[in-house]
Amino acid sequence: MRFLFLSLNYSPELTGIGKYNGEMAEKLYSIGGEVSVIVAPPYYPEWKVNSQYKSYLYKNESVNGVSVTRCPLYVPSKVTTLKRLLHLSSFAVSSSIALLIKLIKNRPEVIFLVQPTLFCAPTTLLLSKLFGVKTVMHIQDFEVDAMFGLGMVNEGRVARIVKRTESWLMKKFDVVSSISHSMLENAERKGVDKSKLLFFPNWADTSFVTPETDGSALRKEWGFAETDKIVLYAGNIGQKQGLEIVIEAAKNFEYEKQVKFIFVGAGAYVNTLKELAKASNLENVYFKPLQDWEDVPAMLSMADVHLVVQKKGAADAVLPSKLTNILSAGGHALVTAEASTELGKIEQANPGIYTIVEPENTKDFITGLNTVLTHNTSKPNVIARNYAQKNLDINNIIERFISDMKKLVKGKI
Image (cartoon, rainbow, N blue to C red):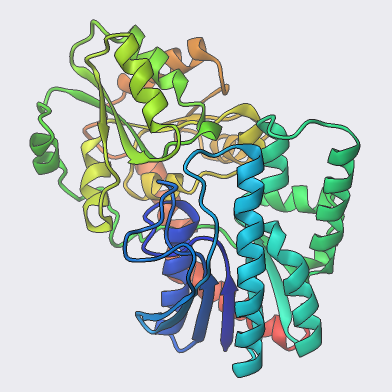
């Protein structure tokens, strides 16, 4: 099959959507698909364009068999609501030109648009109709819900217009897929017909990220003793996570010298967290850069407790991508989420898979962390590992996706 992926993010970005897009495209190519992608130059989560690329130039390249077109975009050094909108709009304009050229030169069978960004939807729908191509909107984040949930946009007349526009655009796609059942239910509430909805979850490489990986060498390299209890947050460090709560927890454990808090990652909020830790004179908080993919299994194995932290509004709209590899590693995780979210439902159906606490509740967070620290974290969480092997294996998920896309092209979806 011939696939065209349209998304802001792509490999070599190491976290979130870019990582999944890269893995998906290369996996499809490896099993015989003809794959091209239209993306931005790598900039996330640092919000700084990789030195090998230019933010104002198009660049065509072949990456592990995948034809990649990088499109210009505006990347603000400091993210505000207005600058984020300009950022998304700039990519929507530049990518529309690349999309038209791709459709003229080698028409795909399916255009796969990843949200964010919704800004690319109008052009995608228009050109797909002109060229007779099937369309899929894949929702990694409900960006409109996230904006309202985080208070980036106030409710009112403008909000109603935005939500109606989002609903109208989504309903025009042939298929709307997403990474969780809760997010699919949300799409249905927004007006998408249930027959168009497709479950397409994020995955883990369960043969690469395993509980058998030895993390002791990395623990030693980073200066931690075998007796230390490592509490790890790894991934994007942004506003929507609400990571101030981890700093508050670190204050509570300040006199328990064996408990160490490590942030691994990059993002717009790193400096703020560093300043908070410094202001409280915390000596149990450490910051490390994003790790290369080949080092991730050792990093996950090294940790005693994994943190998956989000604010309330974001937790309703987003299923954290970092969780798949934590589960695959058999990690012991503390997750902030409400019971009604997908994370809450998974925990209810699989008791012991992780410990869940109410978002933005420091007291509950500290209590939950104490609970996880009492577990025998030297042994893997078998419930988490079994769930990953059964539900998150990349080969099974991609195989099912290809089958669904063949049905779509044949008009059976």
